[in-house]
Image (cartoon, rainbow, N blue to C red; front, top):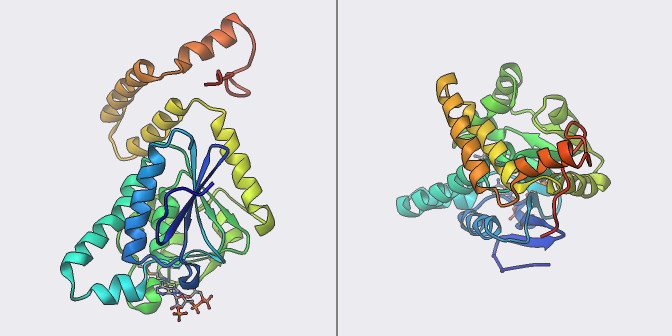
Length: 276
Ligand code: ACO
């Protein structure tokens, strides 16, 4: 089911999954200012949509995202500092700040080209699955810049030092299989299985308590940059907040189904969620 119309992004909702599709296939889904504004609006729409439980970010045609639009994002805004600032803010906002701690699980489904600035949303997503023949590249070096925005910073979280330095400095493209081998993505699958495997992962996530999933990802992602004292205190407070705010009362229900009802094994799968 398609929803609100955006110029450069398409949103389709089906069986609890919101598919956000970057939609400039004729430009390989390069990110122009309009795409940044649309992506920001669409992500905010999906964040509060009660029917959408998992977000999948993908691209139309044979590309996931060819990075920033060299013509419309870089060259056209060189003498337009006001628009440059607005587009730059929207670009960072949706690709990193919003996606990194998005209130729902996020999966990057990389169907084709993934270059430069596309690495930011790729790494911000909780999961990434790619077609084996998808083509990745830190191509910045090839046209006279370094991986900026936040790309070099987020690469430090997602790749080893040697792999990051190699690809930042050579700009060599690599395929989905290599991306999986380097753990930049979770796994690579043949292109014809990409959607099916993505749906399978989304369904697995939808069996879990959504409030707990949200807290779990926030805690892991935010604790990475805290010291031990801060992390311990933050996790204690977050755990209490989750217990108080979780509409499903997951912790109590999980213990009850294991200890009293003996209906499941927490070590082997999730407790049975009541249908809303
Ligand atoms: N910015 C602007 N336009 C782009 C971009 C981009 N990043 N990527 C593709 N396009 C446009 C092309 O200019 C072309 O437009 P036109 O038909 O009006 O001439 C159209 O998309 C198709 O591109 P082709 O190059 O013809 O497509 P092909 O399938 O042969 O190659 C590829 C695809 C490999 C992605 C190639 O287009 C490419 O190298 N693009 C640039 C990738 C890149 O370096 N991105 C920037 C990273 S740096 C950053 O994001 C900060």
